[in-house]
Length: 199
Image (cartoon, rainbow, N blue to C red; front, side, top):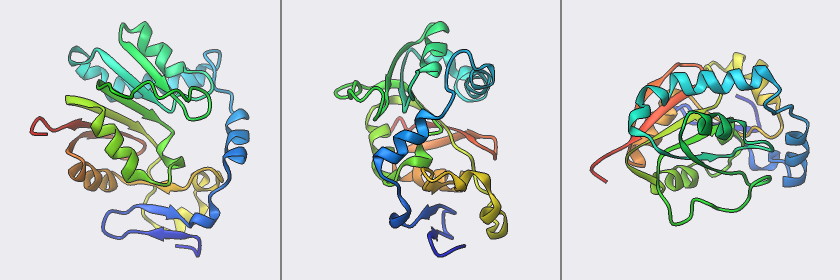
């Protein structure tokens, strides 16, 4: 698609060349420019839509939640707590204590996070390891269209901290590898998976 990307035709995953990955210091500066607070009604509405369309239909099966990549202010975690869930959150910059170690959860959420991650397989393995049997994984990330001309003009790839780009098919391939099943996706940015009971 361009010289600094790799495109897997089998699973439709796109990954920027490692040389394009910015330093942690630069990544943090980008995060600090975001207006991610409970006062930002658009931001809150985005999370409410995420909850409504992914895991809330299964809320009777969910008590414990890990919000992975909660950002400078854990708005999603607070919304889920208000709905009565037992929530912990982790963020490599703002909440770096690995609260999930030695624990499993009924649900893991990860919103606008995995596009920043270079080793996707390691993170999916971590998610699967920390999910209870029948647990859910709810993810938000913008899906690319798999059309080269559109990718080159796509606003989402222009963020220098975004290095990994997905399609629903990418998650279907990853899900099979890590004992998950895709339950839902909206073809745009939301996907819900469930851990297999056979693991």
